[in-house]
Length: 454
Image 1 (spheres, rainbow, N blue to C red):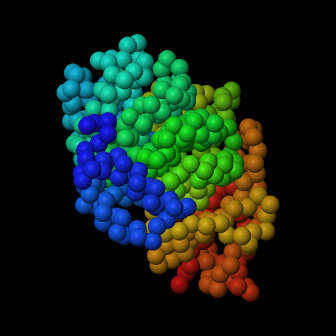
Image 2: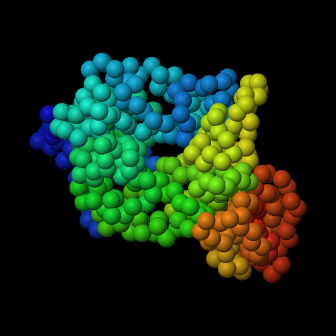
Image 3: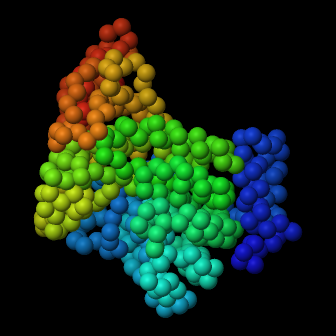
């Protein structure tokens, strides 16, 4: 049945999926793991297990077809993942009939440029839910699940990451946030989807900010057993580095409830900064937005398996004091250029330099030998090279300086080879020669990247 999963040799797919999770839990590892996996393959027809979510850096978009020729190509030079609302109401306009054509178009445009879709399963549908309410009855949940299954059948096996809802802990769950209702919906989706399409990757609970109490309530309901990643939106009114302690707390919470080994990764599936001038929520220049994007991606590389910046394009009707419409790494007007149709802001240029370095990374770690109190150094190990990202940042809440808090410090990097310096925007800045096994580099609040020259 849909609620329990198809039976194979007396074992349901649901039970087999949970058994696989239990058998790979770090506290219950069994020496016969390979035999168990073979048994699961034949006894419950699980098919392919989901591929782990590997590190990615992306951007949120709001279109299913590029608005100007070359828009997706332009996006692909800075980002290789996009996050987009996958609207229930636009796909199912007649009960039981699903029109995927808009998302087929989007998928095809993305795949031409090797961009991974990260789609948000949302929101209400007036065919089933009155007054815009979120699905919270058994019948509404069943309709939502049916739509999800049809979507996974249609797009299955294409590497899409599916996220359940967007920020249900605030206004996006109608008529008001309800953790029990959200947990019931997410569990309804996961128990059936993971039984029928186990290779599809699912993330949740996609909270606005990192709200541990709310997330723990979802975990207590049993949702974590089915997730491939724990998604959050770490928005804040201060610099990106302040998120680290919150990630530590979230990782500990996942460890407490996880039955997987390794445990589910954290996904920062939405987080950004919007330039605006006073008076606004957080005065910020375009330069600071660029610095914060780079530093956000770098900090996230240490703690998450995915980082998505908000947003792609600034609104057409934006004004300098409008924080809500100032998001975006590109902006109107239309340039007429078929490879770069939108004006590229500094944040876009910073992303275009940094994300290829991150995409080539196989491991990321902090470098301990720093001199300054506010300094950061991350070693990005690539297959054939090592890159160091260095910068400094003072933890100032509500920084009044629109160009960011200026800090000037020095960092010592251990190396036996000369290191070439590159700015946040790709400008070559000379070479540092090691002395006694290290180099000392001046750092500011704009990251620099150091490469071996041989």
